[in-house]
Figure 1 (cartoon, rainbow, N blue to C red):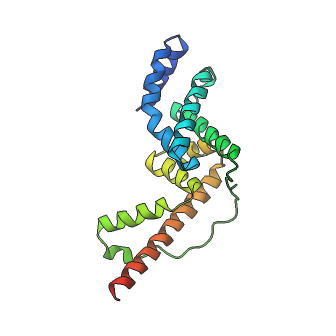
Figure 2: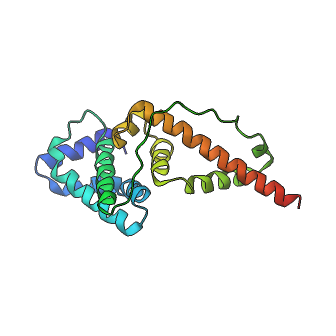
Figure 3: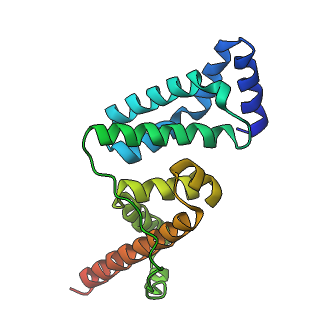
Length: 190
């Protein structure tokens, strides 16, 4: 999935080959759905959001300036569509603040006592317990491997705000895993 291929498809579409859009949809549909699901929380709503976003992207394809990757431009549309959708549903999406990064304790050492599978399970459970906004940022940065600048572009947050949020989210995950470890260790000794 590289930028050149996406640009080639965009150019073909803009030159009249609208059937080429199916390839772009197929290439990006899973991540579009995942992003929408992180924000909306319900699969049915995420499908509707993703479809709306793809329609908006197609209708506005001529505005894509090729200054960023197509996927970043598309994910921004998905993000905005999802936010608009949830606001219409009167769900509250929390605004971020730019307070100083809080000091957290050093990473837990006890995690090394658990197998890699158990460590992975604990981290995955901690990620699942994150808010939709935090889960979205983690997904974009770690699973989609977008840069901080690209995450900023997709979400509309400042670069420094993305960095602060990612730092806080990592600490939340560490604290959640630490709580899980304490719970498991406590159960072991009972």
